Length: 580
Image: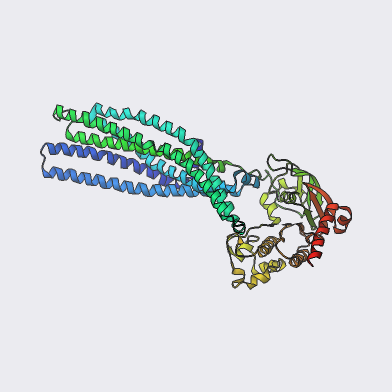
């Protein structure tokens, strides 16, 4: 009931076609149940040697009934398709909208490959179940009940055989479901792993090819796909028992009706039951069995879909670990940053940052240097509140980041990542992610500052050049410069460069830093870099190691007082001398 209650919220504007489907199906069932009764009466009239006029009259009635039934079926199918497809669209939209509210912590919990599976395969399963519920699950029980009533009217106690087979079917389905459900849970988890393998392979295709690892990747994929196939086949084999059980029930009913019904017709000479009633009873028996078969199919589909529904609802009911406070602040006064006794860990892992105390003045240029795993990126993610601190406080503009409206804070903190993403569309479309209504002059200005204007003009379509998904048709350095230009369009109070000039040459890097200093002097600039040359002219440089700040100062001060910084500088300059 909890799953149904949650999913029903997604029906919304498609409630009317869903209800119309059920109403029309009800009338369709009534018409289909009346037809055998009319046929039985016609057979009785023929036995009584009625005229052609009577036969024609009954024939006309049957044609009208069949036409009405067909019309009801067509409209039921139309409304059912509208309702089920609309429900799936709303469900997919609600899930996607919910995912947009997730923090990085929530995304880490589900994994992107699992979210893709839930948005596609799982929603399709739920959609199929919904479609069966509003049409087949209404039709079959009504057909079962009305056919049984009419069968009892036509055949008397012989119709009780219908009741005898229901326990056989019921217990058979219960056993099937108990054995199949755990297997479906395993299958969907393995689907997530399979999608993750595909996603990883496609993203890393260049690496795969450069190391000639195609055969290894094929073998890994075949193993994962075979694993899914094995479990799914096992589950399907269990579900396949549904059909033999139904056939046994059908055969029992047909044997009983034909044996006892024929005997009653012959011995009573048609007084207790005539040929027309016998034919109607057989028809109602077939309808009952078909209804039971459809109910069993619904049961099988629901068995498969319950796990999908649980996975979908899990996404819908997941609340972001980062939320706005009751009375958020909608203005960031300046770009000053304070870390007060800040410590942080991912989930239940060990502490990544330990007791960080740091003050950055608004407008300062800060360099951050440190080895891989020193928590440089983790530090800057706390500024725009992509994660919440485990202990301590992070302040921007003198206010705890937890007290800001999230959109307000993130609009004032631009982050340019080393592996930033460009989206499919023109260069203009990508730039306007930074500012929706940016003018052409504004875009040209920031592109010149990011040293991107020259290579953009070299393209045949210039700023209208189409960017492929992920920016695969531009180089790494070009992608980074476009991302820098996009971030500058926001005109934020804080801009963070997370090793975002690693793919450009040192001359271009120097020109970008010079432009930033002149163009946005009041914006706080934080530059994470591996090259000392990228940060040596910063106002202050922070040296990090193992999640702690082990040195702060300008280039000259750190050369005198910080061994880590001095070693990095000397090793990089020796390499430069050798190459020269």
